[in-house]
Length: 344
Ligand SMILES: O[C@H]1[C@H](O)[C@@H](O)[C@H](O)[C@@H](O)[C@H]1O
Ligand SMILES: [Fe+2]
Ligand SMILES: [Fe+2]
Image (cartoon, rainbow, N blue to C red; front, top):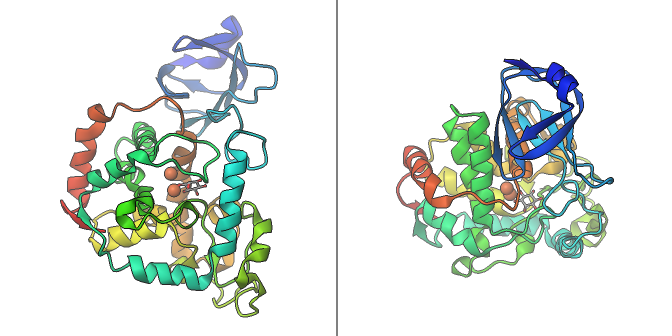
């Protein structure tokens, strides 16, 4: 065990895989075993409270650096040099992402989401394994994502590998991470090639008022549900604390993958299913909106979703995982929690 503070007083700089980091603030003891995965740095340690360090050669306006938050070292910036989920910042992704949300917010209505759920809920599109589905995602880049322009399979592996390092014993969490975005297969021509606006992006409840914390909220003005008095009040068609299970969410990859996992009788625990179903519901898990729709069980499950979200968001990077190397491990998890072939 080393006392990082004392070491930094002596050296004022630490080397992490060849990059020099300057300590800004820290108050912690830990075992400074460091491994590097993409632009995230993982520290092997026992107790950790708070560290903020920044790369020595960082540009002046670089807010990035090394945040230690619980166990995960969260990078300050995404691979485009901006903070994560900044929808206002001028960037090469901004226009595409905003246009995505404009169309999404206009077209996701209560009726539309229920129609899609009925259609895809029949699971008559294909029979295939989980890994086959991962491979189908090789070709898609998510237009709603300001932080990543790599094919989706990379994101799945980056998320799963990052969470696996910090929670080595929770194998269900590794598998949940691997499959959480598989619903994006709806984009595939073999599934009808749905447009991006009804597959990806943040999700939100339908049947009640749209909360202002939803990304690009302004575009809901043109959604027909906004003018429907039965659907545009705080509770709308729902009753107080009815539970998220009763709520119709905007249609997309979360709900589809949840339906697939459920219908194929996965043995993943309820927390895994909750993560899959609501990971894009940022207004709820990030902004704390819609509490009045949640029940006690949702609140309990939310704890795991918070853990998961950190890895889903901050593991996005340009350095890719070696697929062949990790494949056998994930195949063994798939075998443990799913049948060999699933109906999709
Ligand atoms: O752009 C992203 C992406 O589509 C993710 O898969 C989804 O879960 C997020 O909510 C969204 O912001
Ligand atoms: Fe997602
Ligand atoms: Fe994701």
